[in-house]
Image 1 (cartoon, rainbow, N blue to C red):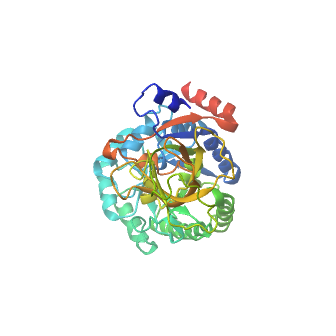
Image 2 (image 1 turned 45 degrees about the vertical axis):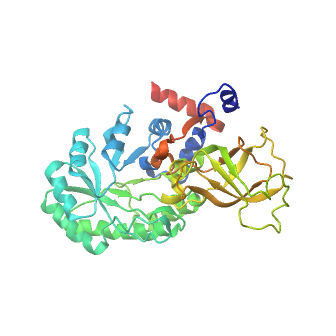
Image 3 (image 1 turned 90 degrees about the vertical axis):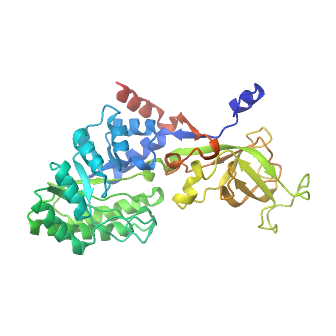
Length: 407
C-alpha cells in the first residue's frame, strides 16, 4: 500500500522488494531450545543472518555467538553487552592476523583441525582455549562441511600431542554434522566420536571440559534431534558435572522468521496467452507459458538457490490491487525471474500462478531468513532488500528483551 502511494508520487524504486522479520519467532525458537536442550548453550551462528536486531535480541536472551571471521567478532562485540567469553571463533582455518586480533579482543575460544593452525596460534595467541574439530558423517545434510573441515579421528592423537608440545591449552572437542541435517541420528554418531576424542585427549594429558555439538538443527526435526542428542549424551557422557556443552544453531533461529515481498516489474507472455483465460492447471502443460520478472533475484536474496540448495516457491500477496486472492482463480504454469541481465537469474523454473497476475502485483516468499541477506550482492546496481521488523505473537517479551538490551 505504501509502495502504491509512493509510486503515485513519482518516488524512484517505490515498488522495491522488502523483507518482513518476525522477531517473535526468534524469541519463540529460543524458548523451544531451552525447553528441549536445557543443558546445551546455544551459540548463534552469525554467518547465517547477521541482522542487527536478531543479534540484539539474542544477546539480550543470553545466547553466545559462533563467529567465523574478524568482522563477525567485531560486529558482535560492538553490541556492547556481549562478553568475549560468549564468543567462539569457530573457523578451523583462520588468517594469522585474525587470530592476533581475536587475542586483542579477548576472544580465546577457537577451533582447529590441523597442525599448521596450532603453529599460528602458538605464535600469536598462546593463551587461546582450543577446541579440536573432528570429522563426522555429514552425508545426510544439505550442505556438507566435512569436505573442507574436520580432523579424522585417526589424526587426532597426533594433533593433540603437537598441541601439548607447543604448550597450548586444548579444552574440548567440536563437530558439525553439516548445515541442514535431515537425519537426527547423525548427532548420535558424532557424539560417540567425540567421546573417543575425549579419551584421546586424556591419553595425551588433557582433561577436556567442553563439548561443542555444532549446528545442523532443522526446525521440523528439532524435537526428534533433541531426543537423539539427550540419549547420546546419557550414553557417552553420563557424568556431565564438569562438562560445558554448547551448540552452533543458525537457520534454526531465523529461517522461518523472515519473509520476502517482491513486486512484479515485468511480464512476458506469448500472443496466445495475452488476454486469454487458460484452463485450471489440471491437465494443463507443465511448460511455463508466462515469464514474470520480480525485483529481487539470485544475485540478491535468492542467492540461497545457488549457495544453500533452496527451492523457494511464491504465493500471491496482492492481485489486481487486492490482498484477497479467490481460490477459484485459474492458475497457469509460469516461471519467475530476477531483475538482472543475467540468464541464470531464475527464481522459479516452474510454478503455478493466477492467470490474471499483472505487472504491479506482489508475490511473497516464506522461510527467507537463512543464508539470504548475508550473501546478497548489488550486482547490476540493484540494492539489497531492506527489512521491516514486527514483534508478532510474543511482542511484549520481545520488546522487553530489546528494551533491556538498550538499557
